[in-house]
Structures are given as C-alpha cells and as structure tokens.
Image 1 (cartoon, protein in one colour):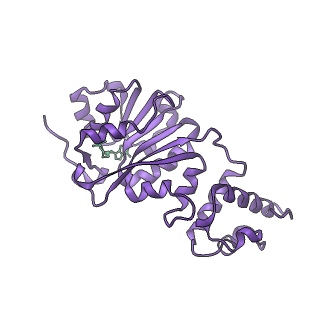
Image 2: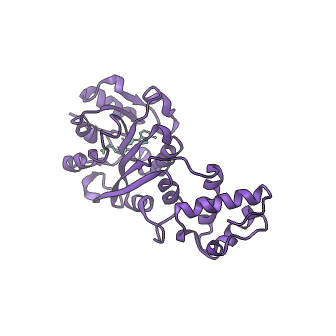
Image 3: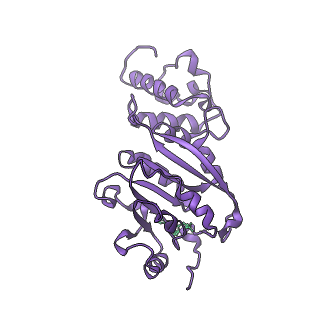
Length: 264
Ligand code: SAH
C-alpha cells in the first residue's frame, strides 16, 4: 500500500513505532469520557490503537491525501472522519453538543492553539492528551518557580491538572523532527470556573509574563492605574506566583479599576 508523502506545511511527522502509539493511546481515560476526537490522524497509527479501546472515536484531518488514505484503508467508518481544520471547527458540531476528550500526535505549529482552544471550550473538553514538542509539553506542566513556567502553564493549570507522561525521540518519526517530543495529559478540574473575572485574569497573566523580568508592580502598572499591589506580591516576578495568587491579584486589579479602595 502507498504511503502519504509527509508535508511540512501540515506539520506532518508520522510516528513509526506502534508500541509508542499504544502508550499515547492510553493517555486518555475512557472512564472520564467515552467520546474521543483525534486531531491529525495522518496514516492512522494512533487511530488503530485507539480503536482497540471501547470508545466512540472521530478523527479530524486537514490533509486531503491523508483523508483519502484513511478512507481507502477503511480503518474507521467514513462518517467518523472529518476533513477540515480543527482550529476552524465548531467544538459543538463535532459530537452534537456533547463533551469529548481530545487526543493526537499534534502538529507542532498549532499545538499551543489546540490547548488554548480546549481551554476556551473547556465545558466540552474534560480531557486532552497528546504529543507536543518536549519544550512545550514541559512548559504546560511546569510548576511555579521553574524557568519554564509561563503563560500557557498558568492558563492551563487554572482549569486542568497536568501530567507529563513520557518523552519520545526524534528517530521514532518519519521524517524525524528537529527536537524531542513529550506526551502529556490534561484532566479538567472538578471546579473549572475561576472566582474572578476570567477575561481580566487572562490579561493579568499575559501582561505579567510579557515583561517577566520586571516586578509585578512595574509590569502591571497600567492595569493598576496608579495603585500598588499588596507588599507580598508587588516585588515578586510572575514565575513566583501560583494560579491562586494570580486570581487574588486579578480581583485586586478589578476593584482598583472599578474605583474601589479595598486592599487585597
Ligand atoms: N497522528 C499521525 C500524524 C501526526 S502529524 C501520526 O502519529 O503519525 C500531524 C497530523 O496533523 C498530520 O496528519 C497533519 O496533516 C494534521 N494536521 C495539521 N494541521 C491540522 C489541523 N489544523 N487540523 C487537523 N489536522 C491537522
């Protein structure tokens, strides 16, 4: 049987190792949700492993040649193959407004956008597991205080528990990528609403990390409109703050912006 020619523009690196595909497929817990969407099945190596589990599987693939291949191979019923761009697909269209988990050996060029889309639509996404560039995988899972802790860590960890599962080497792919890969699992927290204005929370986190070497009193100056943070935060840098700290700061900024005068 022919194989799909890997295309750079779609971030295609096809996994060669079935054992690794099997390990990736175990990243989602079917008890959390029986419906699963695989993003970017390519030639279906991970799809085959997922089909061994008792789940309702759909796949979404942007590359027409891969879609053609999957259809000819008849690995998965045609009605469960969506040809399209995940980033431009309505989450509620995929499983008829029901929630579903996401899995994939993600195209690296859009992997952070996949996570942000999941976060935005978290009421529909109880779990997400898959392969990222190792650096990105680490960043998403890293705890406060580490060098890798940044915007995507805080925004993900505000809503999901994160686990780094394992590393995959370059030679396991065709063509091999330039960097190692990491497989992670995000599991939605029982309470995934924040006790603060969420839009402002996103703004505070992004603003603080965009000038990560400044203290918070400096980086958040504009948002604070002339006020200073409480002593315990003002002289810190963003990587020293937990999700809860960012929530507290968001509520403080919110009060100041509304003209209130309460300290934290
Ligand atoms: N899962 C396969 C392929 C991984 S490569 C394997 O492990 O071998 C990433 C896959 O994502 C490719 O098949 C690529 O065509 C697909 N892809 C890239 N961008 C996409 C998008 N926006 N929406 C859906 N699929 C996409």
